[in-house]
Image (tube, rainbow, N blue to C red):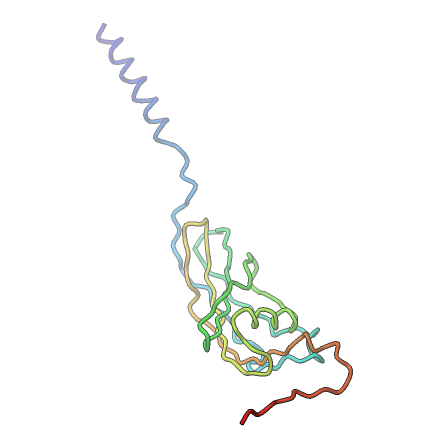
Length: 167
C-alpha cells in the first residue's frame, strides 16, 4: 500500500513538472550593441519639381546586436524639430530605408513642413526584438530640408501670387 501511494505521488509530481514546462516564447536577450544611424550623405536638401523623382539620401544604420540571432525589427521616426510633430516613416528588418524626394516631400508635409520653407528634422530609430525588447538607437541624425508644393506642378502659364494690401 505504501508503494502505491509513492507511485501516485510520483505520477502527480511528474504531471505537475510537465505542466510547468510550458514553452516561454520570449527568450532572454541582452542588448550588446545598440543600433547606430549613419549620417546622411547630404544634410541640406531642397526638394523641387525638377528633382522630385531623384533618390532622397538613404537612411541607413548598423544593426542592433542582441548577442544571439534574434529577429529584430527597426522602427524609424521622422520629427520636425520646429513643430515637434513626429511620424513613423518605416518599419523594416533591413538596415536601411530608401525614399524618392517626392515620397519624402509628402512625409515632410505630414509633420507640418510648408513648401518653400526650410526646417530642421530629426530621424530616430528603435530596435524591437520578439515584441518584448525595445531599444533606442545610440544616436539620432538631423538634416535640413525645404519641401515644395506638388500641386503647382501642372501649371504651365506664368503666374504670380497677388498680395492685396489693405489700408
